[in-house]
Length: 164
Ligand SMILES: [Zn+2]
View 1 (spheres, rainbow, N blue to C red):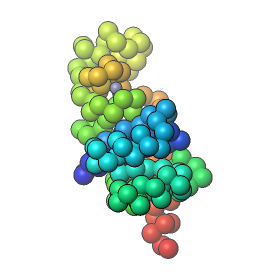
View 2: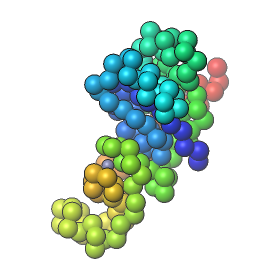
View 3: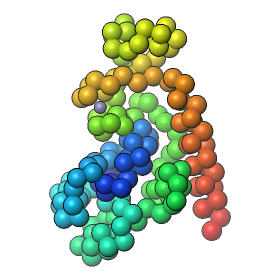
């Protein structure tokens, strides 16, 4: 799948984490003002994602790529971005990025994971990934079902959007 570069505004923390999990390169900070968001989007050739119409208009007036994120739930927001940029709503761990810090995660062996996670977890799972930057370890734990469920409903929303 293609990887795109985004700059998300401070209101889009949850969406940022979803997009990173799906392998998209998303910069995000809660503390940047409009000017700084625009500067980073411009310098790093990132598409600005925002819920703020004024900021969206500022960016497009400057000729930057921007998208006004519509949707009242996280699922709808994700579906709208996926539809607009034709993103796959399947997690592909070979391209997934750390939801916390945007670094590409790498598979690690169980032996490597064992020291970094609760013992119970290491007993029940075989596959592990780690973020080389913040060293957070990931596995397809109980929360994974919820992730799949959310992605499934996002796909259904995309399906509905297609009909209009
Ligand atoms: Zn990380």
